[in-house]
Length: 395
Image (cartoon, rainbow, N blue to C red; front, side, top):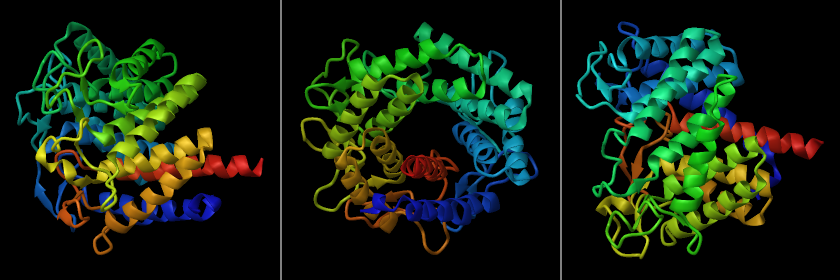
């Protein structure tokens, strides 16, 4: 089994992160003229659009700051993180403190919408940048943005985007999932920021409303009482989001010393993988109907990069925390599929989307939601978890 030799596995992840994925983004994404990052990249790194998605600006700030602080204090990591942090601070939000979704290369809004997830990822990136750089203005802006997110959530005016359900009466998993991760990260990056109640409330919401205890599935959308309307929205399962939620909750629950939540999230991870795995071709489906009707939407049988990166992290973390043999077996299966299908041996980094049979259908390395985040974040988290596994074995 791969986990019988965690040191060899660690070397594999380190090479992929520091010799392949991060060098790709360091070469192709910096915008030396206007600051921030160019993230719409063809397979070989050529820029096909200079629009700047605010999600991806904040995410890349977080990734580079995290690597500088927790992996290797290279000045070029911090310099590039600073470029993105300053671009966000100068251009990312309006006079009310609400964050834009899309900017042009110079930082002018291209989309009239204000997006709550843009705010979440800006706060995530700025918080970690403040931790890496010691610049207090970034911590202040991260906290201000976090509080603005809570105000918008409490008001019920959370801006809608394509992640929102068509039925406005339903609750969506996306926001509490991101809240768990954001609150847990900011609690470490900005000491003294009162985040515990938000973290616990978001965890509780997922574990009591979105997680169906009978089936073990985490639903994408639910009625306010946790019910499942018999509609495409009400039956929608996004395996990757369920897996990501389980990972975030396990990590936060360990931080909170909540063993019961760790075990409950680990159970949910197994349920989501069992339901979401393609038994015919391998890999994780993108969308499924909870009652096994046709995929919703039709591209649900595709395999996307981010679901697999999240699952790599979740399985290593779950195995470290529970030592269930089933997680070692799941990890073996996922590792073989992921590493044989997504990395691009010619130009580096990872492909975005495969069809059900595993053939590449989208070879771009960066677009709307794919940037310097899911792949390097997963590689870094796996490295960190493997280090903990190795240290525990040596104790």
